[in-house]
Image 1 (cartoon, rainbow, N blue to C red):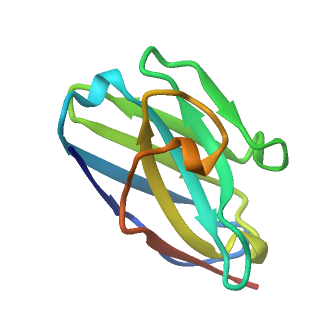
Image 2: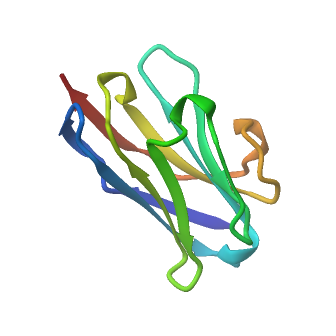
Length: 121
């Protein structure tokens, strides 16, 4: 089992930045691919970014250049740095762990509870 806890969400003005954290406990964190997803009200869960255990990253095309995923295996933590935020980035952001780095939510076995990000105009 892997337990994931996100933090760092909140209210930010458009154009601002926010850094989310996801702390993992349980099974060996460093062996998992880690992903970030988001879900806005009334919409499906959307892929944001993922990172393999050895550091290869992949982003949703629409978010490249504004969002950066990183991980610190010594702290069992994955991060999502978000910049130039827009109101349409408002969503609940989830981190997830998988044996396979993919953009598909159903490939991820372990999920956090989510953290709300609200971007005001």
